[in-house]
Length: 588
Ligand code: DGT
Ligand code: CA
Ligand code: CA
Ligand code: ZN
Image (cartoon, rainbow, N blue to C red; front, side, top):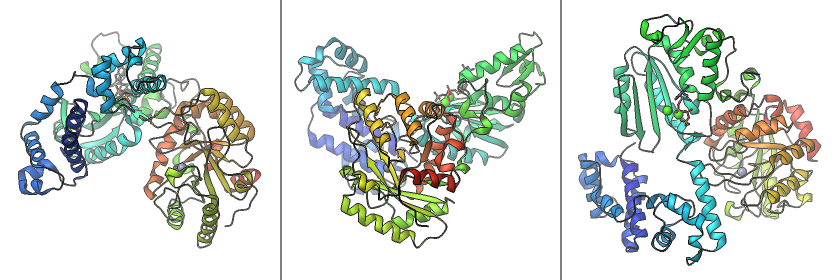
């Protein structure tokens, strides 16, 4: 990676600012275009500046003034034109553009006529009713802005699990390769599998931390070194993600990993437990409490346990607790670590898309991919007719697609292929295909895709109606939320779960890291309420099968065991349930 992303961001900010200032559209477009070019550019633009400045000038979409700005950034780390144009606006006004749905034109209006200078004044002006007299600001629009602002405030700047994980794993692999490093792991909320991550916490065991820190702070992904110390450093990557790194001697590994995995609340309880037993726990180890105020590690005291997490839990009279459970949600009362579902329990994929709707794989490629993952079955579930933006299938195309799936399935041995559909749950709870059409299918995932701002009452009625349909097997991504994007439906989940449990309909954990829907807390509620869970990747491409890990982390955070997950059931049990709802027989 490179300075490309950083410079693209500055270009976009210039364009935003110009637009809010009402400047010439061509100038705005030129900056946006340059930003896009930079984002798509395979080469590191900072390298190009040094090695091949002519190549930079020859890139389509980069005008002379953009090239000059890039060179300026590479030389000085900033762009004067960027600073100048931003200086013409109140300092926090650009932030207002982060509110979903607020474009530069509206922000200009809010600023010039509504007294909005930043997120705080936007909030207060909304509350005071001062914005109601502005043109184009009807009650509905203002309510939308207020909702989106509230959502932005709760979503904050946290990265999605699926965005942070690949970067953390890349860094871990590289850290492990450094001489003298005996262990390297990610800790913090990432290890606990939270759906969003404040920052990434990395931990290495080594006796020579200096070269580890040097490598880390000089990493090509790093945009800015925030803290650089002998055993701990903190950086911000080009992507904006913050990463903390700690280096500890191997003897303290377990204590440090336990401490930096958290959660904070879990750690507090562990420390209290240590005190109750005449010990002290800190990030260096579990020590006998000898009453000395100087920390034991500074006095060369040998810890009771410190090398592994297992050892420390053991000496505290506990079994090892899975990181996903370490949220102080009852893991000390009942430790269900051993029952938790693992990725290897998953035997089949039950929600995915082909080129017939909005997927990228053919039917055969999809079956092949499922087989290569060792699955015993795959349900092919393209979109239904109302999902026009996803090329949903008309009745006629659905029948033709079903025939194509059956023909393709005949070419494979050892995998069951289910002819399915991801049927839209319409706003009023009706399904997008009539029952007699659903009856012809082997498998039905019913999902909400539109009208996701309904009242709780309407959303509840809608999902209950879908659950009541005898042909439905699974409710797909039940709330339709998008992480850092939109909150989705907020149905009364108690009612939904009870109805699903009663009817024998499964609720989905959609593994796509932008969704993770159901979320962890709702998985726990569903599981406790006796509902079955289906964990699906919603693959639109071959590599989307890798999303499974995120669904599994979410499932484990929700205390799910394999017995309540239909993807993990032995085939016969699964088939008996499937047929009890649908009517047809699967061809093997
Ligand atoms: P995040 O980054 O907001 O997604 O959440 P975490 O849990 O990764 O929090 P972070 O990065 O601030 O700290 C990593 C872990 O280090 C945290 O889970 C527990 C431990 N830790 C950090 N600060 C404290 C503290 O003041 N007290 C205790 N007991 N533990 C702490
Ligand atoms: Ca963290
Ligand atoms: Ca941290
Ligand atoms: Zn889907």
